[in-house]
Image (cartoon, rainbow, N blue to C red; front, top):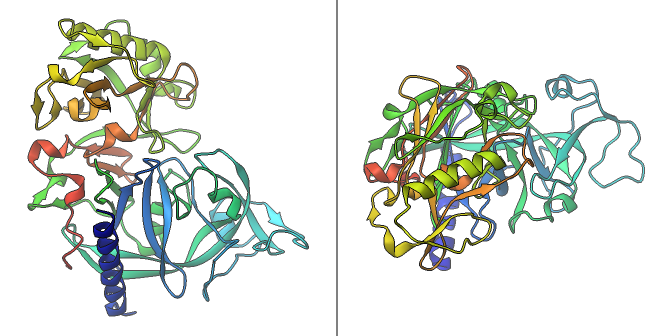
Length: 428
């Protein structure tokens, strides 16, 4: 399997280079871009290889919904003829909302340059932080018609932040050299692409449910989002308002939660409210969390009521970090995963119900044992519900920042396709 993955990556790289060589400077600006994403097998973090620098090379990044910018290791093995640094008080630094200026870099780290802008950056996994240097270089993406990748689009003077090599050595996947942030911030990846290319302020994620195949992010596209065998999932999305926290995170408003079509008793409705974004209320998304983390009282209410719906099924000793587990032999297998009661998040908006079926609610914690894939976060998190990667797998999620809405679909296995079924091998 490892040899097949290497072969696929090599072919993808060769195809990308060919597409780039065919794109011309006179080509019209693309309407949409596409980026393969994958789950790292060792860490379960989302990773993307993004082409950049001159000459172009693929560079590995962790993809994070809550990081405010793109940062990369510039201290080691960074070679590019198009690298530059904006000067203090420049338009680029103003667009990044930073007033920090490196006034004297004598004896400082190798990538520090005097009279250049500083920007606070953080490794979102280890939480180590430092002041990096704002920089510019080339970045490149495949264009798309929503069905296949097209010619590469080269974007010069892309704004990002330089980080020391020590920052990427702490708990990030092997080979990764930075973080591609998608938060609601001025120099987050999607916002710079929008401002530079004039594409729509939209990005749509489809996270794979396997570590052996790529999912996809579309930038700038209202659709189609086409997956083999020719299924356009953009037509079946439901919509709910998006709210942005003071930390540039994305929030949605869960009005109520039902299990087995019955309201969950004992929920603290104040904590469900999106009015408390950033202070233990509301519902947000976190691609760094392997599973959804719930505030303590919400976790207790959901797990207790879920267990009540399965009162005739014997429980087994919970396997950390989960609180409710069963032997898998008691559940039938369906297109939507193990046959367990659905968990419905009732959201603002017409027919806006996010139904979580067994595919996204039950995880095999060890052979023969299925656990409810939610974790008790106590009072440790800013949000009441922190939707993790497992609950986002095979669910198309469209972040329309122009309209401040989230479009979402049901699990793609229910319509016999997957997020890993975008056709990267054919050229538009």
